Image (cartoon, rainbow, N blue to C red; front, side):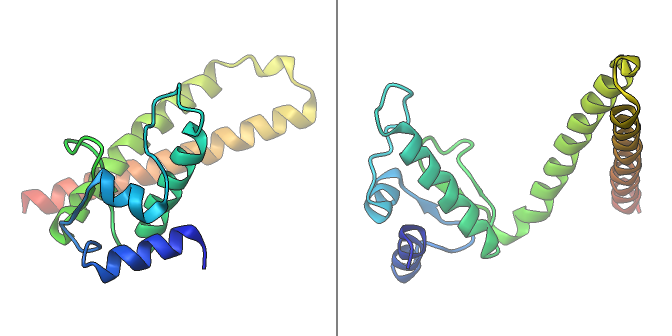
Amino acid sequence: MSKIEEAYKELKENNLINYGSIISKEELEKSLNIKMDLAATNENYWESKGLFLSFKEYIEKKGYFTTQRNHGDDLYILKLEEMADHIETIYARLKRIQKKASISMQMADASLLDEKQQSNHFHQMNKLSFLRNITSSVLRKRKRLEVN
């Protein structure tokens, strides 16, 4: 069993992995057996940060969303009823990222590329355009549902 799995099991057994739970920095440090002084000057920064992010990812694969926003160094597991709004935030962020990527691809001087690179460049632009349309469509549909 990995360090991440062991930490998850321990926190679950201690009833700390639940929707709406807050896992304190101290509990995370104890369970992961790390010091989470995540300052860039800490010699174990990357190991600590990597384990922490891996732990967050592991929890999310188990059906939870987590955040530290408004919780300092503690880890908040979203309530079940907060998860849909969290997805809406993800979509909005994705839309902004896609727009920036689309502008960058359109503004790039593709004439400097060879034929194969140009083909790939335009193929990626088309994929990005398709994804932007899907994301926008989903967001518009969601807004229509909220109005009704």
